[in-house]
Image (cartoon, rainbow, N blue to C red; front, side, top):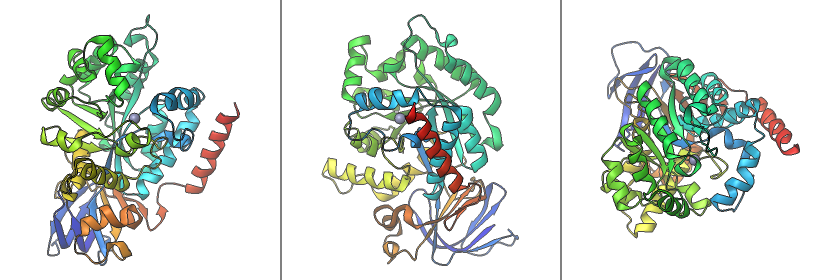
Length: 428
Ligand SMILES: [Zn+2]
């Protein structure tokens, strides 16, 4: 496939008004201002179109679309313990599959080509990923409230081992497996330590919630004498490449510590706002050397899985919180939502438009009124049209969404099955 005469926005915000982008198999093989000599097959007219790298959602729980609107206007602890956990106790493999399909559909139609997930019934989410064509890093949430159990005794251990054996690297690397302890406050230090050993043994990345709320952060210091970050360091988790979600309450010492290791912070601005958790000072974190990517968190606390909406919120919030219009400028924001996210998944050949990169691409329709005039195309996308202008999404060179139609998903069936699954759970 070749995009002809198309405007391009690279991950760092660089704007190229007219390009040829040739895709062969899963890869971008040509980027230039003149037509390539080779034949790339299907021609896509780039007139009134803008090509961007696909967005990477660095932290979500995709199947929680099932719980969209199920716990509203509540703080994290009661939202989690009074609404979410009781619903999750009744989850089935079938419900998670359809919930994942719904979340994936929403992500594909809003330009997300890859996501990092932590949840249960992961095989069903993996199946949805494989069938839909999106890519994902999948982690089985590890938690433990039973003092007699060690990591190797937990279903999460068995599930993680099975996932690694069966799916790590599947579909030409579209599916990767992470080791994903839920959080410091839902497990014990020895389990975090053993989980890190498992990740090291298999060369895997890790994923955890960190210092999301003030109370969680303070209680950890009370329990262990360390902040959650220093506890992760203590148990050996920082020796593994790691994604930490939220980090709202990190101290300066925590940020210094994290930035000395292979750690990316997944900033989930909207979830933090909606659950009243606070505002992560990501502009400061970045200047202190901590890489920041963008995540939506789940549809139960957002309530959408829309990365452009998330980037817009993060940028506006950073500017307002710092009383500094220059905080998180558009180019840096796009980098966080694309390339930084890909790197946080260990996908070094994803997240930008350049020769040799995976063809994970989003096409926007620039006839949308909010994308006109093209004084600042990136700002027009981020602060203006948003994902409403997405007209095509490509993952590994395959068109998975085009002009309102999914090529891999049956939306009517997905809506029906999700409602059926939710009705079944809430009737119990
Ligand atoms: Zn989360």
